Image (cartoon, rainbow over all chains, first blue to last red; front, side, top):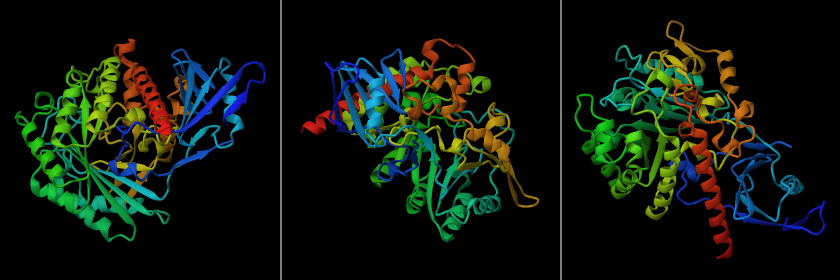
Length: 46
Length: 422
């Protein structure tokens, strides 16, 4: 997923860049200990 | 996919912002920042995200059934008399929790699938009932599952108590509001004496012991004028984690000059604090973005139905702010009681169902908001305040949440871009 073409307008290209998300270091979690130990509680639903 | 007027977007459950002619989407599930340039048709963003199978289509909540989280209100007694306290009204008499009742309730929350017990001690000032804490800790340690302990104290405690908490590996939260001027005005002792000297001693003692602790600041209109000063004060004492929350005003329950906050100003000052924290090597915690690493449709554990708060009289709620039936939200958040006559923990299923219904997917005003799964609809008690008093934009916590989240996504993008190019 680096570049994708506009289907409706072939003259315009859409540039997509992806970075690994780096949250600002000063953003803390609820519990100091949970910064290192995030409990996975998500599920993706199609 | 939805777009709001303030250059933000919610797409496949992900928050995005418009910044320097780019749409920047934050995807916590894949831990990515996705940047779109040259996009005029916003539907295209969704189309491109949909092509990538790693990206989520929507977000739902899944409770962890292996953890039993029990918050014990050890006592409603306190050695401080805070101006904004939500516990004062409706308190008829000082009451300590009975240790036998506490143990029986703990045992009843442990199911065959439970692997971990989290005990959190709250009050009043919880250390004023130390015998109960010790009994519960000893009992938890005797169980066959692992246990962790947390406590929320006002810091006006003896070294002996701190030593006990450190010995038992507690995660400690010190509720304190900052520089002496603010602390002493807002959080005087019960007899009207300044509390800042004792709290400072406590913090320095914990820092000296390299303890795992955080400071929990409540921001009132007064404290807001000194917010950066307060953060700098704690940093100078050696604090590393600061949890900052706006004061909780439960409508007319504790409405006074200390509880009516200008949220627009709060957001502005809070962003300054985040910038300061970067320079001071501090971690700042706030409910606005507590779910930023793990988006959720539920604001807090209480709304997930996987924590209970045991009050001194055996009444059970899901929120530590709701400690008696005088609280305006007791009808929603009080879910049952412990019956000492037959040792039965009676939690009403219908009440729990009502709480599980408090979900951002069911809140009309949130459906198009880019902060939807990070703010998760916010705290129902604070939301209640939107229904009373001044409804002008400066009193709208949603705008403050959006400002803070916009800033954080922008910073995350700049941070991520910098890291990738270095």
